[in-house]
Image (tube, rainbow, N blue to C red; front, top):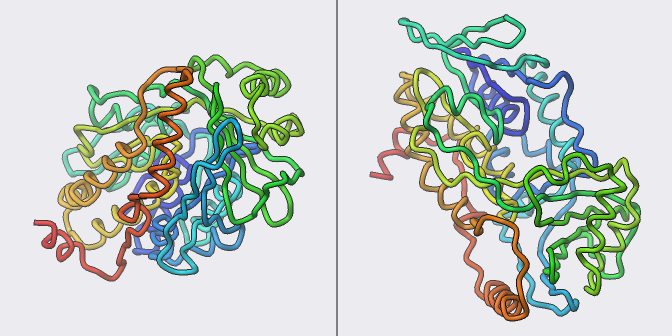
Length: 395
């Protein structure tokens, strides 16, 4: 089987790796001319994401270039402790790990190529059609085309493939804030390289983690319009961020102030709770093209990797592609919709008043004392298990 994978991010490269692990041909078509950079952006691969990578012998790609993240310390604007969340992990090799987004992209792309996948940059999809024999042809904006047995849309939040599968597919909703990232050689007084520190300020929230070599990676959630920060220079963005925390006692702010211009980046945040149609005419979706969870779930990359592995297992075990895609939806839909729902927030920028902040702090403290996320983090994929047997258990 030959698969055309549209998009060279985490979902696309993980799909190519999994397909090659199962013996299928895969070519990745990435719209941008070069690989991702992401400046100071970073992400965490949770236990379930590591488990999915392990299923296709690829967990070393994360383990070799990351550090452990065992817990989240949550504090309010007065630096008062609200609680500590210990992140579940079923085994030492599956403890959550934090790494730069660009390092993960490069590692996945290099591994996909090493396993025999083809990666082509500068190929932006504009259309795709299935012929009478079941083959799918992808058409690109440079007037070239490619044909395969299957097309996987791993082309992100603003997916082209999503609309090709279903022209009435819902579009992602802007969540009401942008998330800024940065990295700086600075160690806050509360630094623990195994932990995240999350602060809920009066006007915005932010947080940080510090790597074992003393570099602090921070993020800040900025209530604003969707494109309000898009054209700001790094210096203007920093000047926009720091006043959000004026009067708050938050260690992350010092890190934000000390970050150089070349280590700051910002992205708008979206939510996409569900899609009515997952596949059609030899095409399906994976990652953010299929489901977009709030960053508070820290599950974006991990869910994309799960998609890649489960989709590949279905294609491996079921002889008909249409049946395989139906099985993929059946095995994934409930879980990914639950993940998105777990992080869903009311849309639109808003500033909590004193009463809302008090209630927020109480809710966070309660959640820290009574966590309910084993279902999320301890999910296991058995690569050896036959998909038909797994489907029979869900009936």
